[in-house]
Length: 64
Image 1 (cartoon, rainbow, N blue to C red):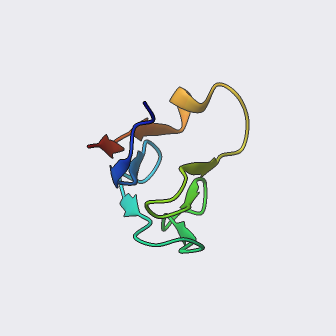
Image 2 (tube, one colour):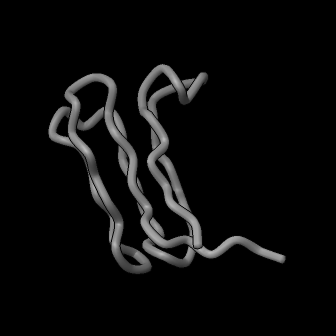
């Protein structure tokens, strides 16, 4: 059984912004431009400068 995304959000550890993608192709970037998010409720895509991702953002995605 696949988990369905209820809220697609992350918190940038550099600037503290919480960004959310609400629909497919809804690309959002934090104010310092270090991290970005995309995919809405269809998929959870994260963009960040380098590994490990935990260095740049906190995962806040919620599943049904």
